[in-house]
Image 1 (spheres, rainbow, N blue to C red):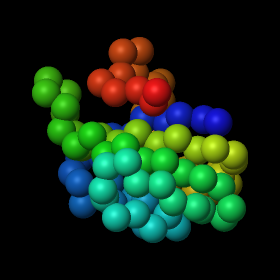
Image 2: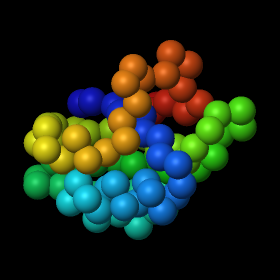
Image 3: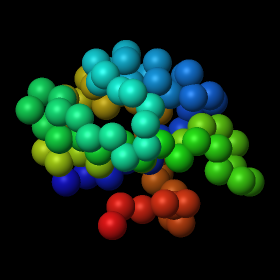
Length: 87
């Protein structure tokens, strides 16, 4: 299981990044989807006070191809104190 923290300039840019990666999203917080047989949970955070951009968290239960991950605006390094973490 791997957690990713994502940031794009806008909600539209975030959704477009998911689509470019081949991940069909709805934009509803807490959505769970299957991608190539892998469970993907997405937390849509939106704007975070004091931090620029539009944010989402993604938990992948398995492995996604590097080509998919490369399309996503994954923060690297991950935030040391994320606004929201998975339970």
